[in-house]
Image (tube, rainbow, N blue to C red):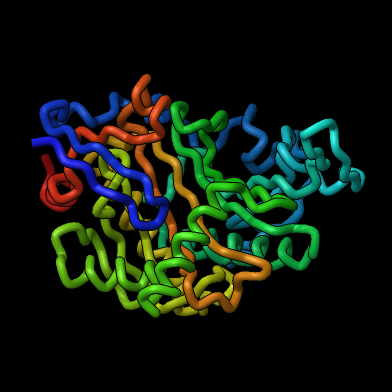
Amino acid sequence: MSELRQNPLSGQWVVYAPLRKKRPYDFHASERETAGLPERDTSCPFCPGNERMLPDIILEKPDGDGVSWMTRVVPNKYAAFESSCLEMNSENGPYAITPGYGYHEVIIESPIHNEDIPRMAPERVAAIVETYYKRYVEILADRKIMEVFIFRNHGKSAGTSLVHPHSQLIATPVVPAGIETKKKRAREYFRECKHCLFCDILRFERSSGNRILFENGSFVAFIPYAAEVPFELWIFPKAHQSDFRLISDTQKGELATMLKSVLGVLTQRLGDPDYNLLLSTFTRADRDDRSLHWHIVVRPRTTIKAGFEIGSGMAINPSFPEEDCRILKEGP
């Protein structure tokens, strides 16, 4: 039977249509083009020795040998936002206009061209998390910045153009409408129930258990009750924190472990699908907001939006979350 479920964070309804479900093995990606990649590519700007191809190096986390590096942060050569934009606010009839002030950076996650997160040593994944944290904190020191987005596009259909493992950071001078909607719903829930919506979701998922994939001392990874796409995953910190800046050193290490586990199981069970990963956090004026709770969303690209989804804004998911969780745990 078909079923509609409402996402309590966005208010959006998701249509579940199991008759449209593909067999689990149909979700498997074909052999990825990166399978035969070398450890170093002379044409890749992110590989060591090709620094001449980079516009600059903003930050570098050195390796233990004192010679090589673990992570690098560089400006995005094709930036969507730039800190050099002149300040300007004006109107054009009914339209407001503001410059594209902000930051757009690439976080190179490893000097090794063909080493993705599931294959990395734990200390290297921890270095990625620490790099996320450093850039996030430093950029929020700019009082003009309202939101910072750290994300990872994996695979062509997810929007990546270079296969060398990397994430991106975009900082904006405005708060996008989608973020404002999520904040509004969380605050309304807090006023009515006197509880954090995110904490209540986490409490329910842990008590239910049938959508929980991984859990460690600081984090829980689960498929949300109203997942919009097959195998969508949320990673919630157990501690109530609105802002990623509040993460402790212990949490950083356990977040690295969780990321390696989550991305590893997608590779193992689904044949390394394309996906988008987003650190969803609330910044600037929201740091002490008791109704908000930062988290990470991972959305595999296993389906394509068609006419109904685009026109209505509602998703059609051919796969129930409980079954997806079983597949990730046990295999198809």
